[in-house]
Amino acid sequence: MTAVDISRFIDDLATQSGQAIMPFFRSALTAEDKSDGRDFDPVTEADRAGEAVMRHMIKTTFPDHGITGEEFADENAEAEYVWVLDPIDGTKAFISGLPLWGTLIGLTHRGSPTYGLMHQPFTGERFAGDGRTAHYRGPAGERSLATRPCASLTEATISATTPQMFSGKTLEAYRRVESACRMHRYGCDCYAYCMLAAGHMDLVIETGLKPCDILPLIPIVTGAGGIVTDWQGNPVTGGGNVVAAGDPRVHAMALKALSA
Image 1: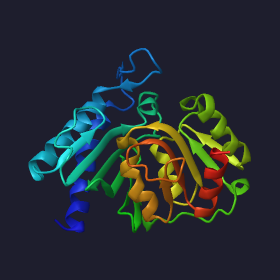
Image 2 (image 1 turned 90 degrees about the horizontal axis):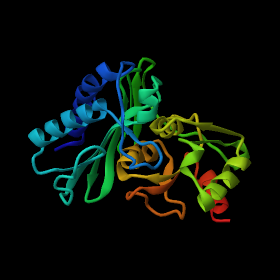
Image 3 (image 1 turned 45 degrees about the vertical axis):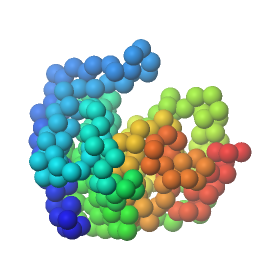
Image 4 (image 1 turned 180 degrees about the vertical axis):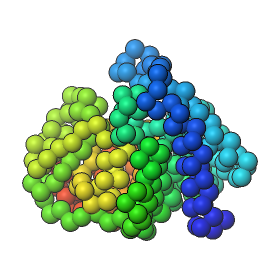
């Protein structure tokens, strides 16, 4: 199994899952709430259809691989290679008719993220990385991705999906960083990490993420020259609190402010 084989297969996964998802976008789709009465956490038939297609393709092509995803139970999660799937990262945007969502496809080897792709089938964009390089393909053509220099928080554009994801001390910590930044943007979900990798944003800080929310994005960000850790600077493969930065200098400043 070469890197080229994996890249081609992941492209196929993206294409097939996109074909399953797109008929539901901007339709009369209804969403279920899987939050058990907490913050609204929607899931739709589009989520399930997209993940079901990918799981079938993976099990047919790589029967020894494991799969962990957003909508269905883990399968062979202790395998050497494990696929990490989030068919629609940004379901709230999806059901609102906004294109700020994407399909996340990741592959880990012995627990470490080795390849990731974010596919937005509505805009026809794909952001991919293997931790060493990262690439964009879409209506604007093809190009390599690279983060931009950012020497301080005062120069930084920061993003979080929503300030409502923080509470108590995590909200206080996030506000310390955000208040020092030049500009903030909300509601981008996985797109924020891809815009960071493309050199348009500088920081993404979030909390309460699942592994499927972040693992596929790590090889994209790091392949573009960025860094992704938890709030203490440790690896973040288990999800939780996340800091992604395009420049190590602003990453260090963000960690310092978060722990102040």
